[in-house]
Amino acid sequence: MNSGLYKKYISKSPCNMHEGKEHVDPDAPGTPGQPGYEPPVKREDLDIEKYNDRIENSIQSRIYAFSWYLDIVADNWDVLVLNDYEAVMPVPWKQKYFIKYVTQPFFCQQLGIFSKEKFTKETQEEIIKMIPKKFVKVSLNFNSDNFLNHKMKLRNNHVLKVKYIY
Image 1: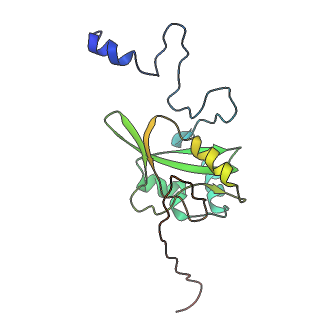
Image 2: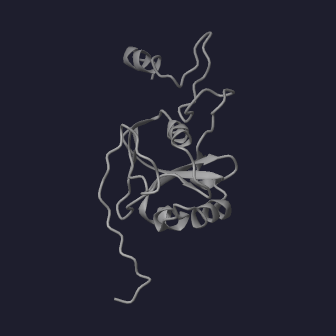
Image 3: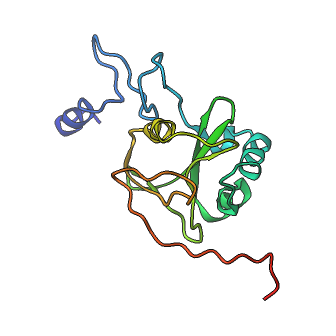
């Protein structure tokens, strides 16, 4: 495994330690020890009770974000957690060969950020920046209660209220 080609590409990897350089965590959205550094919580390490409680009691609540639903529709998913589950953002991801990317699962219309209280556009941007750099591409449909930024596209969504008898 010590071929020239292997050395050429492995030496360029940010995940390797070299003399005088620190190890870079590919899951890290920022720099460890710096403000705003919050690594995503892996599915197996997630506090399911707190997570589902946040989804159920959030003002943006959607069935698509519950853990049991994501377990069915997404092969892999992590969660960005803000301040002990004050706000959460599920991050469903896939991998082709060695390339990881965030994508909306089939049968899952809206995800995004879920919180008990309203948050500002700046807070949303901070949470989005927490998505790890290891994901080459991010393509998610945020829920209708989240903000749009310049990189997002507005899509039409029709909601039928079922509290009335038709």
